[in-house]
Image (cartoon, rainbow, N blue to C red; front, side, top):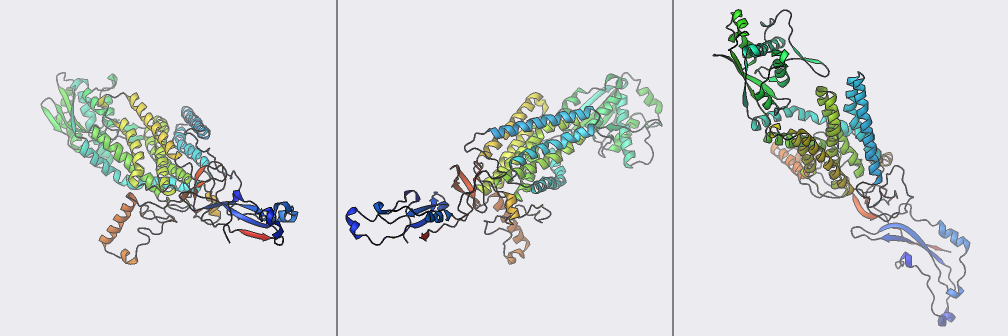
Amino acid sequence: PPPPPPARRVQARRRGSASMAQEQPPKEPPQVHAFPVQEQHASSEPVVIGAVVAVVDHRAADERAEVPAAIVADVRSIEPDPVAAAPPHGAKGVVLVPAGAPCLNTGCSIRAFALLVAYVVLAAGGVLLDVSGFGPLGVALLTLGPTFIIVTVFYARFRISATRRQLAFTFCEAILWMLPLILVIGHIDKIITDLTMPLVEVDCSWPADRGGQPAAFYSSWTAQCSQWASGEISSAPLLLRPDDTCWTLKGPWSETRITVEEDGSMGQAVFITILEEASPLDGGLRCDAMHQVLRDVPDSGKIRPVSTRRGPKEAATDSRADLAAAYSELCAVGAHDACSRWSRDHEALVTMSFEVRPTTIASAFLTSYFRAGFLEEALKYVAVRRILFKDRVVDCGGLIVYGLAAGAGFATAENIEYTLVGGLGVAIARMLLSIPLHCCTGLIIGIHLGYRKFLGRSYPCLVTLMVPVLIHGTYDFVLMVPQSLEVPYLLRVAVAVAILAGGAVYCRMAWLRLESVCVVDVRAMQRAGRVSAPGSVCGECDCCLPLCFHRDPLVATTPVAQAQPAARRSTTSGSLGGLARSVTQELIPAGPPCQTRPRRCPGCRAPVRAHILYPCYCPHCGTAMQEEPQRQLAPVAVDV
């Protein structure tokens, strides 16, 4: 049959002019047709959005009779195909965003204010617990609470798109991926130190009767205590009196024994303790040259004594054993009265030489952008990239939550490590700065991966990581710049806060590009058996190939999974070649098939991107979109 006329222009056909009224054929009953209403987009096929029922009467206008009520009832009973019809507005769980909303709309502002209030309450609670004598509980609250609050706020916003189980799995996987980093981070630190932090020798001199003799004594005594604790010597230290015990350093939670490494090096806390004990009445010995250099030595940096001199006598201290014997050697072994006269010698000068490695611009740059920025953000990327093409990641809201979970998991583990050493002050500082930074970069990674899956943009791995690494690295670099440059500390903190705020603004602006992507109810899809249940890296056995497998339902071939059996049994060079191709595919991927298609919402008429695999809802008004691929309605004729 000929195609029906447009629905909006359906008119009753007329038999002809009044001059042909004499030649009328027998009267025909009216016919009822249901025509599909279509919309044509530049980038898609015609899409059925509904059906309009028209009553076509072939009788002349002057002879046309009223359509019987039975016919009208039959016409009303002809409903469009349920797949093509537009379900009602306001799907349960969909957080609506007005079309064309600004960066800071009402809903976003309310959530930001709620997050700020929760942060203030959490900080006040942690400090109150610490003041009340429950220090460990307060620090634990400040360590674990911030990430919980941030994840809860974002999960409430995207709860229809994400599941709590997958969120917990991604959170834990980010911590799991830290294990390989822990194994290699020591070697990386050593390489950076050897390449960019040259040794600097510093001499400290004191009169023998004004702290010089006690400084040499306590240095050797500490080395002997370390030998005794490590089992290097079986008897008590020779310099240890019966009523003495080897020192311990009191930390925020427990006391640790002061130790000297086998090469004679010691931590900054040990060195400062020796100077304080050498002249307790004066608040400790002063060595201006050493204190000037120590400003640029990292907290984990070591100080190694090189030699100890008293007048013409010199004792090399190239190892812990040499340092332990240095004091007795300078006193002339066996002549105890010589050591006692040493402390009363007004003219003798004791000089101790030390080697340290202060921070440089180059070391701060490499540590900030590579060790902290790139490696840490790569761990978050791998945790989110593993589930990118899983069918349970049905829209970009899920990727937002899972990217945040990866950043929060890493931040929590790192926060526990630093807080155990630094206590309450470190917990508060990291709560305000470091934890929001890690969560922000995790969000950006999730957003960039959302571009790749739901907008069809070819975002390679390095492009996805570029902005998070830049934000993270610049934040750390500002705080790690050597203090010898005399940059005020408050200025550093202000710049770091500005960088964090800039990262948050970028994150929000980047998310605006995805606000037109329709929302999918992931739980409904799981109940219907259309998507997989949440899974962990261990349960799905793909922990070693997160970069090589594409689990996208629209991807016809995968670089590794669908390789020929013969290729899998190839030689080592062939396997390496396949791995190289897989990594290349990840770094410079071909354009991935986009899982959304531009449409216009039948409810609010706003342009949106509807999912082509699952039923979805308009993010602006909640109207349910038609599921694709869509079959078109054929005209239905009803003869009365």
